[in-house]
Length: 75
Picture 1 (cartoon, rainbow, N blue to C red):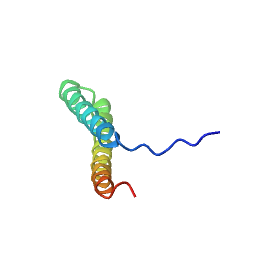
Picture 2: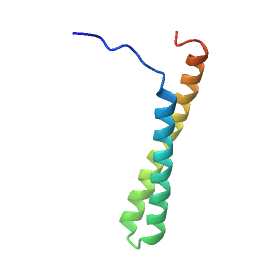
Picture 3: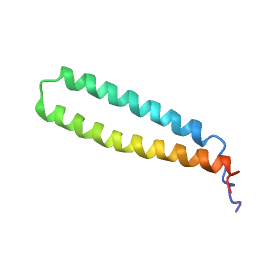
């Protein structure tokens, strides 16, 4: 069985893609919040967006870590 090497060359691109998708999902949820009259749906969407904001913070931190690691040659 072969071990897969840690190929981190596209990590920043992949993380940025995930950030963009998450931001878009937040925007779509905000639009749905504005359009819905159902308080349960509105609350569920707000809670989901809060979790997305936490995820965005984590992904941005991960990008910073990747930039530092790349600067140091992924040691």
